[in-house]
Amino acid sequence: MPALLLRFPPQAMSDNLSEASRLFHRVGGAATFDALVRAFYDGVMDDPDLAPMYPSEDIEGAIWRLSHFLQQYFGGPTTYSEQRGHPRLRMRHAAFAINPHAKERWLVHMRAAVTTLNLAPMDESELSNYLESAALSMVNTFEA
Ligand code: HEM
Image (cartoon, rainbow, N blue to C red; front, side):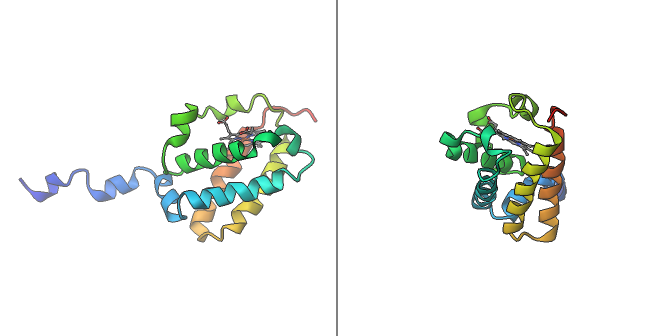
């Protein structure tokens, strides 16, 4: 049998399966996502508009949830869904009033956290583009 058939699907095809699946490894794996989310929560918990929304008694839990969600999204281990089920992020955020101002504050802290990672420009864009559009999709009220 020609070697070509034995190697189906070709490597190039499996590499193309998901652009996101490679970012997790390219940027340094779990440690990078933990650093990102810790830097993000440092900002959030000092923010008078956002901090009251978050569980101050369970920040380690919140760090675990966001870090593992992002790891999974970008092609890392699927531990988040194994432990928390389907992400259903819009639904999970329904309990919080997220207006455009809250979304902007969230992004201020996330952008600052992303900058601390000093990623390669392409990786930084891929990560940032996702975070920006996901944040926009989480807005669920226009009330102040
Ligand atoms: C737009 C502004 C946003 C606000 C104000 C917000 C607020 C919150 C709050 C208050 C929690 C509860 C903290 C906890 O106990 O885990 C939470 C959880 C979470 N958020 Fe957001 N969030 C926003 C955007 C996002 C975005 C863009 C993402 C994803 C890229 C995201 C992913 C998550 C995840 C994965 C959890 C934990 C869900 C769970 O497993 O229970 N959030 N968010």
